[in-house]
Length: 431
Ligand code: ASP
Image: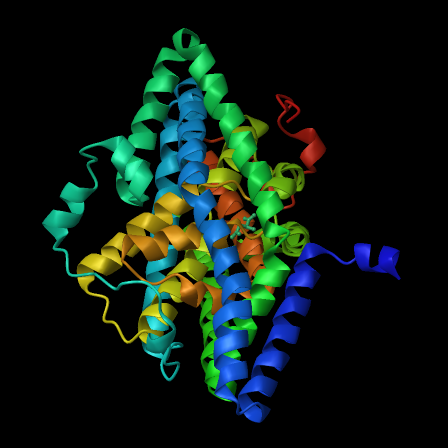
């Protein structure tokens, strides 16, 4: 029995936690009238401790995880110089597609309004503050004192400072060898800590679901379903409208030929929920599409880390969902801040399961949204993580094809099936 339980994956445990928490919450809401037992003992003590404790663990990770990862990510992009314009173009396309993705998500969620009808005002523990002007927001991005920004968890100045440290490390290379190593090892420590904290996710999710549904009852179901619908719609638009259109506009290549070859990579990303683990298969399939490894061996690993369009779509929808549930209006400045922070969050983390949820707390913080709402969507995040990872890797591949097309490093005969991949690019270097 115990050994059987051990074979259940973390993702499935999260699902189990969600279902059990939901059932218990609904039962409490329907059948336990004693407010002392229900609200005081269970909801405000047991579930509050388990749920909020887990959210605090996630918050604990954000600042060091994002800071180390941005520094290491940017420092390693020093290789850009080696491949010159290809590197610059790749990064630019990655940033633009992510900004587009989060904007699409914000639009969809403001039309569908998933958080409407979910009154979470009473459940909030944070403060909502979003009346800064654009000038203030830009000014506040420059840290007056980076250490106090780190200590206060002000993410935008932390990101800017991290970018600067990364750029300088890339420039000084040998001279700053020890510091480089320090950041690389710090990054590994934070990745491991993330994995450990996520092991507690099923308990956290169980408590958060029970707490939410004990208070809201069935009322909470429709908004959650609408949220899932928003994210899936956004992901579908990005994968099947935005990417094919980009491919046609920039290269005139046939997107159907791309999807026919690439679908297996999407399935692998879907089932593993990690862009990182999908890198080898992604490289393989791009070679079969005629892309030279000279480009893909750089752009695909880079994309797995800095380009997460699917994740950005989830974050855009989640922000709107929470803002609507808390009855707050996000002004233009707040929306621009969300786009910027989600793009930075995408750069600031490696492609491993559920990491988008952790950086979501940073996006919420950037506009002063209470992170409690994450507890509600966390329960159903596993399935969305699978789908958005498939979109993340598709984005990396599409950008790679565009960049290699512009650099004449894609064999169009191979792409169009007129020549076998083995006859192409004898410069193939193993990844
Ligand atoms: N699982 C995603 C990836 O690996 C990241 C996330 O959205 O959590 O690309």
